[in-house]
Length: 302
Image (cartoon, rainbow, N blue to C red):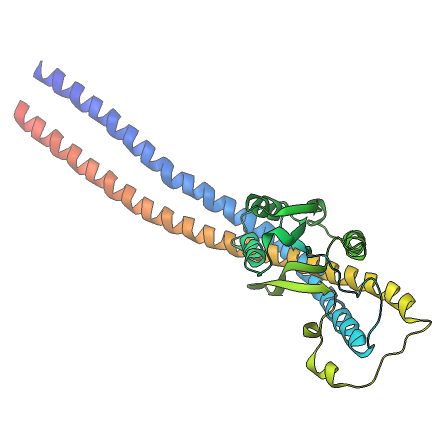
């Protein structure tokens, strides 16, 4: 009877220990799956980053030169009366908030939201033209007014998309619905450096004109006339700046996601190593205890 009872006890204990071991095994496996998923997302982001970085680098020179050229021309043009340049009585401020449609990009989206919140512009005055669903979700929760959402264009922005948004902004500006226009985006420096930036587009103020340009006394002449030239120039200026901001933002998003997934993969691998060590120690302890009990039981029977 003793032998039968003891065997039954050992058999039950083996089943319990086996169940514990199987549960313990699942935890490292779970984290291994997480690590594999993060690694896959990192590889996808790396491929997308190469394409986005090339677009950003190819457009950056034009984007910056257009901004410098227009501000320089307007600085030398003297006082020009034009709806696109006239400071409106409206207290409303249009802000194009460029974020992403997906998360898992570290602080990429949160940095743009923080930039707008800490801009010094009162929440009640800001009308947001959002490009990216994460910006809509974050800023709407904070009580900001969403004037228009263009989130569908950010994954593959085109020059035509930028022109459409620019036309809407200029229309609101010329009607006096907004008095200023800004764009909040993430400037792409390199793979690991992305800088949130708030750029004023209209009206062009003295602060946006380089100091050396202010010192020059030569005035700019327009042909056929100032009004017609400005009517052609400013829409192109707006479209170019917005398109440049969009492609830089896409490159920054993929760079940020690649970094976030790399960090997540490393963290998961560290957790796996730690859990496997704990599992092996627990398993060894359980085996040692089981052998001790078997020997003690055998001695008691004998």
